[in-house]
Structures are given as structure tokens and as C-alpha cells.
Length: 335
Image (cartoon, one colour):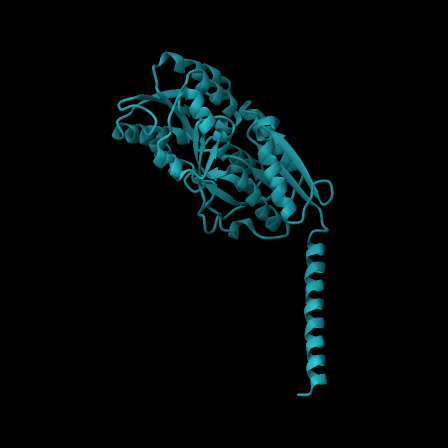
């Protein structure tokens, strides 16, 4: 082959690669030209869920969709009001004929399912959707629901071990649970047995919905407990984390939660999935179903990375020394 032929072949190959790249770019641009109409059914209030809303928008931006340009987001906040309020909020979203509805817990997912059997529903962070009857299986969800499954309850034995490292032998520990969450009853039994095996005495502290949170926290002062564990799988612990953190500080109680944001905001320790990351990753599901993918056939994603976050500033305020081996395991420390 002559030098001229080699140059011509090289230029031809380069031109083909350039045209392929331009075609790919044009295809991506075309795919994001259409506007996605998205509904989000939040469990709590605007202030407490703002960081998760921002994470979802970041994920959508990564997918090429920006609110105000080619993305319309309709938000509804349940704010832990009445069941009728949740039902009506879900019905409002269903009536808008949206491309997808994002849900934030078991209860909002169930409300959305009751409101529509056609609009795709994307779970952002929902624990045990198979066990709760929301989907048929993780591999093939069936129906109009897909998204991400949290593993909050599976991590609670490890959270209990973290608390054991900073409380005395035989200590009474409060286990904060939402009596309106059907998952928490089975979790309480498992946690109570695990706590006793670790030489801790569990004390059941019930929250009867969000309105009862303050009364439940006030009761801790009379229960002679030396630590606090917050059961996960409940949106209430996101919405009420400021109150829980304040009560733990006031009563000088070491505490642990399943949401990293709990330690970031002033709680002592947290071990679990980064909830904001879960919301960000759910954006990929939104784009897929909005562009025609069948949610019944989209496998549900499970988290693979969990964080141990320890707030050393809080430890110092409580007069607690975190064991060196526990610090070595921490993914993040806050000082």
C-alpha cells in the first residue's frame, strides 16, 4: 500500500469516527429535547426533604434533563398528615397524566399504586418492596412499579453493635419505633433479641405518627436509658431527625441511625446507604420509563455501598471516647 493510500484510509477512518460521534451527540440531544413531566410524592415537608429533592434533580441533570428547560416537576408533600391527605395528593398526581411518579417510602408508593395502574412509579428508597407486596420480584417487578430497594432493616444489627461499643455492659437502650409502621413490629422483636445477646436491655419507645414524636422523645428523660437506637425503614426519621438529634443532645444519649444525614446533622453515628445517592440514582429509572421502558421489566436496584459516619464533635460534647477500632472502620468522621 502506498503512502498516499495509507493517508486516505486514515482520513476516511477519522471522518467515519467523527460522523459517528456527531450522530451519537445528535441522538442524545434529540432524546433530551422532549420534556419529561414528573411527579414526586414526598412523605414529609419541604424543608426536611429539600436535600433529597436536590439529589433527584442532580441525577436528572446528569441524564440531560433540567427543571425549567426540558423537565417539569410537580411536587406533593404529605407532611405526615391524615391518610386522606396522602390519598388526595396521590390522586392529584395521577390525574395529571405524568411520565412518571417518584415515591419516597412504602406508604407513598402504596398510595400512588392505589391512584394509578398506568403511570410508571419509581421508588427512590423503599425497603423490602417484595415483602410489602409492592412488586412481584426484584428481577421482574411486574405492574407499573420499579426503582430502588433500600436495605435499611438488614443493617440494623450492625447499627446495634455500633451503639454497644459506646454504652456500658447491661445498659438500658431506647429503641425508637413508629407504631404506625407495620414493619417496625417485626424489627422490634429482632432488635430486642439482638440487644439482649449483646448484654443490653432494650426499652420500647413508640411514636404514634409524626405528631407524637415530641412526646415519645420527652419520655426518654424518665426511662433511665443510656443510649438510643432509631429504627430505620421509616420516613419519619428523616423528617424528624432534627428533633431526635436535639433530644439526644439534651439527654446526653449516644445514638445511632440508618441515615448518614443523621450524623451529618449532629447525631453521634449512622450506618447505611447514602439516601441522597439513592435519590440521585433513581433519576435513571425516571428517564427510562419516560422514554418508553416498561417498568414491569426493569429490575429493581439494590444498594451496594454503605457508609459509617461518626460525628466526633457530638462525641466530644457527650463526653464519649469512640474506640480506635471503630474510628478505623469509619468512612467519614465529622469534626
